[in-house]
Length: 437
Ligand SMILES: NC(=O)c1ccc[n+]([C@@H]2O[C@H](COP(=O)([O-])OP(=O)(O)OC[C@H]3O[C@@H](n4cnc5c(N)ncnc54)[C@H](O)[C@@H]3O)[C@@H](O)[C@H]2O)c1
Image (cartoon, rainbow, N blue to C red; front, side, top):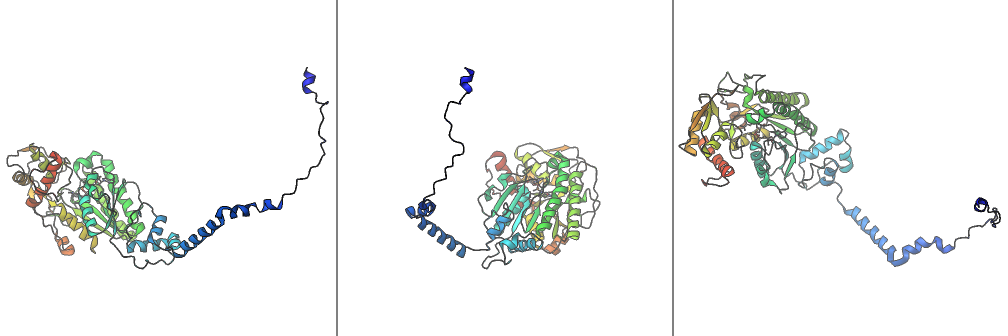
């Protein structure tokens, strides 16, 4: 059985050394690609394709800015607006410093004829916040292209939603503690929680935002040759021993208190700004902002004006800390925005105090709120908070002289605009018929 399975000796085997040459290919098989091409007018289609390609490469524009933009920072150049002249200068500088891309894409290195400068490209960090969103409104109205960079810690999309769909507006969710690369002409650096409730919530994050965030934005300004404006604060004067505060006053700040993450953070941000200016020739501006109020403020942010207004509207007692005799000055947001823009466009580095010198005690402020909202609104006294400064009033002579700026909206005019906005947001209606813009 097993031998039957293995033995094949009786089967006939083909001779192993037999040679069969390959039959020669007929001549026509070599020409089959040619025949394929000639069939069904394929050759005609090839010719037409070549003609179209020739026409395209002859007449297509060679150095349009859109080409340049796609190569460098795609996220910046989504905006179809013509880029500004200064941005183009930056492209050239990139090439000169070895970037190479500009020379490849724009061999002439010139602004193409007929490309008009249509406003600047501006980044506003913290642009979805209270002050930032009003600034964005003004910049867009002026004709600039604005990129808002915000992590929405205290800012809200609602504050800038009315610009959605505008090709000159872009919104990027981003934390300034992380680096960011954008091609812009100006940087308004506002990103930082501004009310004690918010900046004390995570003090380490607050100081990181002020130090690392400002470093990142200054690095960006240096890299792209943008002008940089820092929104510092009157808190750099701490609990001032000089009154009113002039820019030359160095302040009286507690470096280890609960407010230090903000006060010292902003002081360090000012230091960094000046060091980039002196050491790296970055064009910088520093604004020291005093208490500002207006529509779009966070409703429960613990700042005195928003507190009083929200409490009076909700028929709750207005909380006054301490004896209520500590003073503050209150600036309406449109005045601040005007000051920031003049500072950015002007020739002076600063620092400049931007605030309303009109001084009010907390009790006087509570009275104005009573007059505006509810004459029967009650006041409740509470112990004062730690490190709360006793007096704060800006000396704005420098801003008046060098920027030609001073506030124009008195508290009694600005407050009703804010009340109207708060009323709408708290109750969802518009009872007093006052507009908030
Ligand atoms: N409003 C005032 O009275 C006042 C006074 C002095 C200084 N300032 C300064 O002005 C600027 C704006 O203040 P505001 O009143 O509009 O405050 P705000 O809290 O309404 O706005 C700050 C914005 O920054 C954003 N932000 C915070 N941390 C961020 C981060 N790490 N990355 C990206 N975005 C971040 C927030 O989400 C918010 O949109 C702040 O720098 C503040 O210190 C304001």
